[in-house]
Length: 150
Image 1 (cartoon, rainbow, N blue to C red):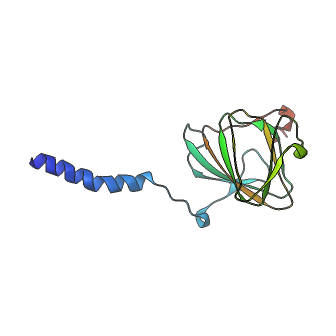
Image 2 (cartoon, one colour):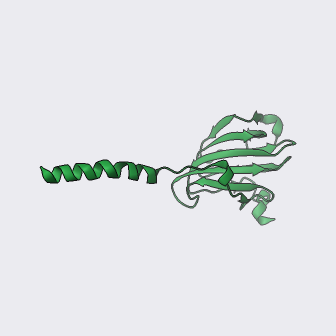
Image 3 (cartoon, rainbow, N blue to C red):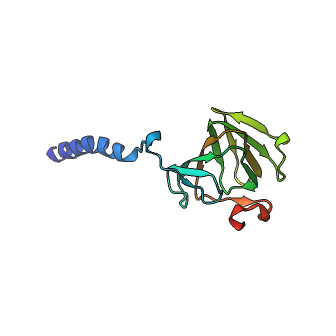
């Protein structure tokens, strides 16, 4: 009986400690933005996770005004939230903004894995938050559009 009481007490006190270690809080004043590894002039910050691993990733991306990302696919499904600015989004393998939609702050869209799409910004800086399960990756429909090759 005494052993059971000791074990129960340890579990009772260990529970909150384990829960605290399981929670990560990210505050906007603590963000360190860095140059995006693919897109020149774009900044990014990983809030949660490691994009090289098979785990949940929460990433913010800050696009400058009048920025275009050529048609591409990702190996993962993603949920994108427009945090600020306006964000153009369209499906397809050819860049044609008339086929897409301009989304304002607060808008959310979801894409399935390997779904060809392209994005752009208007005359203001735009920040989006992207949630996906890694590992990350991007493949351009036209390899010549890949900024890593320029």
